[in-house]
Length: 229
Image (tube, rainbow, N blue to C red; front, side, top):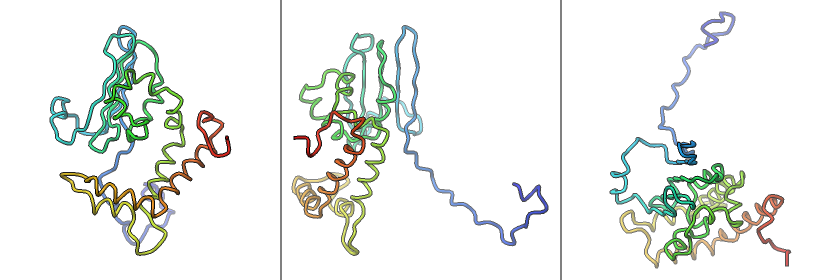
């Protein structure tokens, strides 16, 4: 706009290139937080999308799974976690008369349930009866650290790239093995795990994780690390 109002500036001879009108990728969730009548603390974290009634969403074959503890109005509080078809947390709903760490629970968005101490299997086995207590146990503190998202990005970059030219990445192998309709068979999972170990990716991921804990140990003293015993 400055060139339109300031005649002293040189006018470009060629018009600027038109920007690419690509569809934006939304990585952060939408967040609704409020204190409702009756002193209820409410938090709703969800994926940016076209509003669709929940009754329609749950009928989709790729909706995923829902895990709920507590009831509205109970002393325990109500919490609902919805994991999508990739087992990552996509929706978080909290309603409680007690205060809770909203900033921490927002960090759960997009995190795979395996990173939450195998949340899905523990819930199905009846080992989790209160998400508020479970998600505030010491093991979860790393998930709420402000550098945890950077660690996840670093590990993802590690798995989708390779140092040697011409070699397939683990991402390429997974894409070749996976079937969109049936997913991975036990044999394919075993093949993928063998590649994960043999390529050195497993050791590299463990090294990144240990470096993360060691570098941030001032805030994460609840985790064990090499040299402690």
